[in-house]
Length: 256
Image 1 (cartoon, helix red, strand yellow):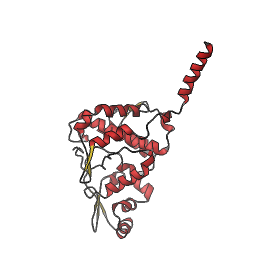
Image 2 (cartoon, one colour):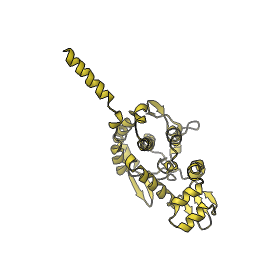
Image 3 (tube, rainbow, N blue to C red):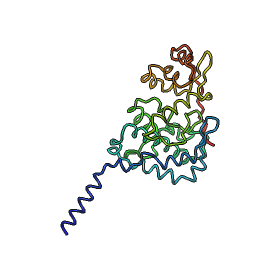
Image 4 (cartoon, one colour):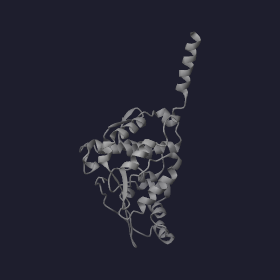
């Protein structure tokens, strides 16, 4: 009997000692399936079917439970790409929850109050603590990952934002996905206009200009890489021979 008890305790210990990161689905399949169901691209702009999402709230909540269940020690065992994919998907999924919790709304900016914006609302748990969207983006992502392309991956549920992807971000494809997101956004002529004598860029490049400067030397160097395939025009942009103006940001809800 004593031997059986010892074996049982050993079994429990071994189960608890298994690397918990193995248990987490780094393919983010539930979120991937949900995005394919609710996101549609029309004329280069992805739109979300929030009515359908409200019907599928259970699927979203179930996925978010797996996100909230991840502890900081477990997260620390993830690879760098796994961590970044996890945080991007977390931001996007919790943003969807925020919208559907307050739906119908015309804009994410209608949520919250004068003193606490939508991005400051502590409405979810991450790493065992109450958290908010700005914390995920600025403290968990921007502070720890010197990767300016994340600005085209996280989605703020607005028309002016880079499109919410139809697929979840995954570590195995993260580089390709970030490249595609940057290219898609910069070549969307409703959000970034390449004129003959001037650039009209999204306010994202004004708000977060330092992120691009730190990684690429200048906003122009980054923009030139993605906004066109024309080598001559790229050289003109990167050489800062086109003045930049910033477009007004469209905060209308990205709704189908």
